[in-house]
Every structure is written in C-alpha cells, then in structure tokens.
Length: 581
Image 1 (cartoon, one colour):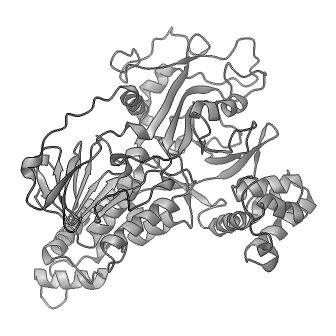
Image 2 (cartoon, one colour; image 1 turned 60 degrees about the vertical axis):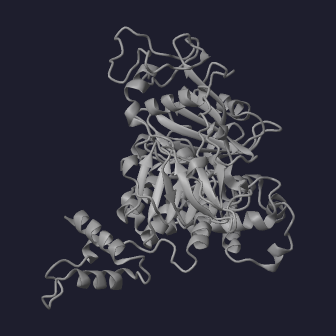
Image 3 (tube, rainbow, N blue to C red; image 1 turned 45 degrees about the vertical axis):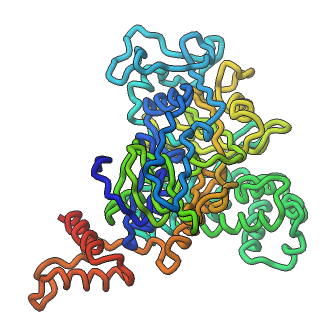
C-alpha cells in the first residue's frame, strides 16, 4: 500500500518484520485486530532475512558504509494537550559488527574483498571471459579427485540461485515453531526438507553420529558393546529418575562418565545429542537429550527440519497470513516518534517517517529502535566446493557439532546445506558457522575454517573442501532482551532479534507473551480456514445465499468467537473466496 493511503487509526502498529514481530502481526490480524506492519528496510525479516548472493553483497556494502544520521525534525506541532513526545532511535547498524569478507581470487591467496557491484566486471548478466583463469589450490598440492573449478565470476552470475541466511537455525520437529506452523495452517505457505544426518568433528576428522535406533545398529564406528550401552542409556533417559536427580548441579559430563560410557559415546552424547558443553549441568543436559529423542522419527531419522529457500521464508509466511486477514504492509517506512499520554503512560499515536499522525492501541517494535547493551554471537558464512563428509549422495543436509578446537575458543555449530534446499547453486555447498562470541567472528571461527577446509592458510596437504567465498560478522544475541521495561510506555513491547540457540523456542515464546499482553482473552494463532471450508452462494441447501449466512457459517467453522467487527470477518470470507478462485 502507498504510504499516502494509510488510515489514521489502527489497533496495533508493529515496526520491524523479524520473526517475532511477524508472528505477533499474524496472531493479531487473525483475531480481527487492525494491524499496520512497517519496516524501514527495503526487505522483509530484518536480521532473519535471506539474500541472494548479489543481494548479500549489497547488504555488506550498506553495513560497511558510514550511516548518516537523519535530520531530527520538530514534530511538536502534532502534540496535543496532555501528551509527551518520545523520539525513537533511527540507527540500526549496532546489531552487526566486525564484518569481514574474503574471497579466493586469482592471486591464490585470501584477500579482503569489498566488491563495488556497480563497477564490478562480474555483474549478473555478464558472461565470464573464456580465457579468464579460475581460482585454484596451490599447484604443488596433489588432487586425487578432480573438482570443477568455480570462480567468483560464476558465483555472481548465478547469484539468484543462492538464498543466504543472516542467522543459522534449524527447526526441531516437535519444537514450538513447527507446532505453531501446524496449528495456524501457516505451514502451507512453505516447504521443508529433513536434515539428513548429524555429524561431529573429532580428532581432526568428521564422523557421522548414530542417533536413531537404525543408525546405532548400522554404525561401523561403534562396537557391539558400545551399541548396547548407547541404546540402554538412551532408553533410560526418557523418564527422569532419582539417580539422575542426584546429579543436579553437577556437570553432565561427570554423569555420563559415571554411566560407564566410553569416550566415543560420551562425545556423541555430550556434543551431538545434548549439544552441551563440559560445564553444562546434568539436569540441563538430560532435558536437551530428552528433547532430542522426542523429536526423532516425526519427519525422518534426525530431529530437524530446514525450510526450502532459507529461514527468511518463515517470517514472510506469517506476514502473508497477516495480510490475508487484512494487515497493511509498508516497507521503507518507519516511525519517528511516539505520542504518549502523560497521565496513563500509554502510547496514543505515532508519527511516521512522512509526518502522518496515526493512532493506535498498542505498539510493538524491534530491538534496534531501543538502545541496550547485549552480548553477541559470531557468524561465518562459507560457499564451498564440496561436503565436509562426502557420501554417495551429494544432496545431504548436515548438522555438525564441533567442540572447541583450541583453548579459550567456544564450541561451534555448523549447518551444511546442499543445492536441493534452494540455498546454493549446484556444485557448491552453503556452510553456516555459529558460536557465542569470545572475540570477533574472524578470531572465533577462522581457526576452525582453516582446519576443516582448504585455504592457503592450511598447513597440510590433506584433501578438503575449498572455500570459494566467506563472510564473518558478529550479530547481537537477542536472548538477553526483556519484552518490557526500558522506561517505555506501558502498551509498547520490544521484540528481540535472533538468539544464539539452535531452535526457535525463545522467539516463539516471546511472541506469544506479547500477544497475551495485548489480547489476554484471545487464542494465539488459531487455525486459518482452508479454502474448501468457505461457504459459497447456493451451497447452504435452503436457498439462503445472504452475506449474513456466510458470516454465520464462517464463524461456526473457524471457531472465531470474538470478532472485532462484521466488516473484518467479511474481508476474511472474501479473501479466501478469491484465493479459492
């Protein structure tokens, strides 16, 4: 919708299109609230976004460019008696820091790359020159298996075949996000792939982790005795016992050691199944193990799903649901300030970036508009020419757990995606690395990249996947942000960005908490009706084809008990009527 056409009053105004904000928008719109959803960026999903390769290069340039502070305008003329004016922060660059890009170029060395897309010879429509040499490994190194060389020019030319996430997460098959997608029917807007294997990095090698019963008995890494011990232990973990409770507060590794499990099994259970560290308390480690086991077998032989086209699809799915039920969207549009009632400390209205005063009952905003000190996660994104563990199939989706490779470095989580996920071009793999920040992302993750992949910094001659391009950056960890407080109006709620965990529980719980504070009597994301559930003219059997009959049947079938207005319900009826046609 054009910004000039915006109505002057909404029930809920939401600023930012990250996952938490998008879920709140969909939930509110679904129960009849008038929702205005804005984002100052030109793309959806904020720090949850996915980009094509060329789009990511543009995003990198925007992050590295020095942002010019917007001129503060005087909006005091719009302030009514009994109101205060509160200006929002307009700088969002603080969520990303220490950004570094490297590319394997013709000089056979890793060089810092800052690509000017407008002046680049590798624009998307250009064919690479036939005599242009491709980057290659050191000629002194032997290559038993000849790989097709892929140049930076080819990556840029095929840039639209990449969908590169800013955040790396997986979906637990029985996690809160999957449950919400199913409950709300939003799952029909997306496709998903099962993560096909779980790997771990141990003693300089990548090994497959046996996690299901079939994997355990088919494993060649474990002896018969180890297989029996592992199955016995996993069976005993299903229910909490007094023996387990005796270890509460003590390290999970100590508990595993006391179960007479060898080093192999302890490693698999600690790092790959519980995804814990040596200091993790036993009760936390056991809870993580149980959650892992509960998720096995629902959609495949691992607990995880990944959305086709990347994680950035998920916020957009919820935005689509919000729009279907009447939500209004504006990108490249923001809120400059709030108008707050002095007596009640409630936000009465906002002034947008065009100077329009828009009234609202509730205001939800992403964390970037409020200054707060938080910890960070370190991220690396690699484009490689091979898998870390080649197999008969080149379409594996892998989750890799990696203990600290050096003292003072954190544990690392790796997700390796193949071209069937529609996140990279055929012949390449997209690799995401994530860990809690100790230093910069490059300091935290480059030692591991050097060990597991071939770069000119690699000291040995072992054959490994080559890194064609990589990006390092630190991102603010959203797990430490509180929804309320911060000296904000009582009807203003903060949504945090991505956290460092593998799943989405923190974000979905936060979205539900915000929704319940806004509408405590309403159901959170009730199922959207299927097109076949809509009543059309002449289908009621008694000749009554009036709008009132449609409305009555719609409420009966969908369970909508408290509609904001008949008009809102009719919009939904006709929206789904159009969808069916």
